[in-house]
Length: 100
Image 1 (cartoon, rainbow, N blue to C red):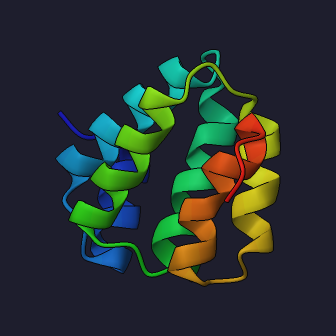
Image 2 (cartoon, helix red, strand yellow):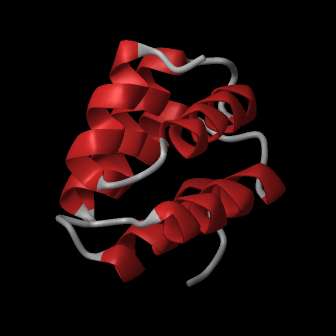
């Protein structure tokens, strides 16, 4: 069952609520269970960076492979991407200190 947050964001961004739910669960687990910051990251990716279902799955997969990481730093880097998908994907590398 989807939450109101997933339903609302899904309808605004044309992403399935189930994909948003899975992304939130995975991101929260990967980033020390910080659900509030994880929601902010997902909102930034979907609303400003125009991520699709597949983009979101790819991003979350990249985060999962790079665990653990600080969700607040990740949110900061994703926000700095200012709507650019490529820069949003590079945010993971910046947070873990991996050269881009």
